[in-house]
Length: 354
Image 1: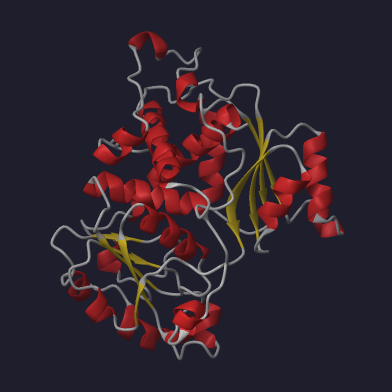
Image 2: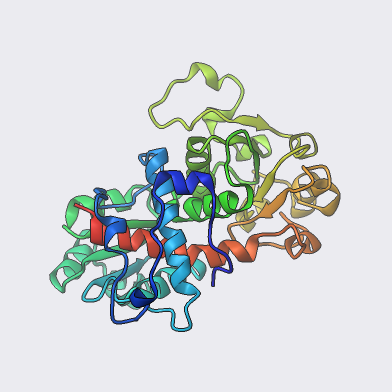
């Protein structure tokens, strides 16, 4: 559960969560009606289309949800009568379980559907599956799919609310939102804060969504990776290549020892084993030598610097064991924050979305 609630000028200025009176704490009542009163977005497909104020609005609502998680009985009927389907075509522990728990805490009926063990194994298409879920009363579908863009297809196919829980190598909006939640709770404001993201930028939907959200919130983002793990738009000469899907401007480095100096936060990304055994990287030992977050490297960051990782971790490859479990680590806090953030997303889209 989230151990402390946010109390920052950024979140308070965007959409302060009203105090919850003792009379409103009963599980029989829904105290959040005003939080979604003027929210218009029906879907959460990525953070690139969210404004700064919309990002802060979600995180401010997560602050109110964190208060629910502190109650002796962490339940509220805010989404009573709502049916949410978790439609996951890829394996997931953190995202799927936190969305399931988020829906149940809010009073929704939550049903899990996976690619394995469903009619997908019999050849059912994504559109057919979505139409089936709509026919049995899905109000919202939380969706993870290996194909980039699948949530956009879903949003055009059925009337329910669509939440992207990760699509291919493209986007993971709720991970980026919970990372921003942790950073704002830590620093109060991200204007001018230096955030370093190190690892497989090319294949990482987490990196892409974080680049969008963190730059919108005013952070100075540096990405660090060996050249084969950088998107083409970030490599030398890419400045002349204008493309509508280009990411925001960030600093690009190949030397972690240089990039980490003075950083306020460092986020390591998971290195997938297939990258190490193929042509993109020579070996896990070589990658660790140049890019692993070690205690010595973290010591070169700012004194108050924090360490983050979206998980699951390969301890000993992208992050040293002692760093992953150090006092500077916020990795477990990221998992806890994901619950409040996903509660906020479900609530705003379903109760406020036009």
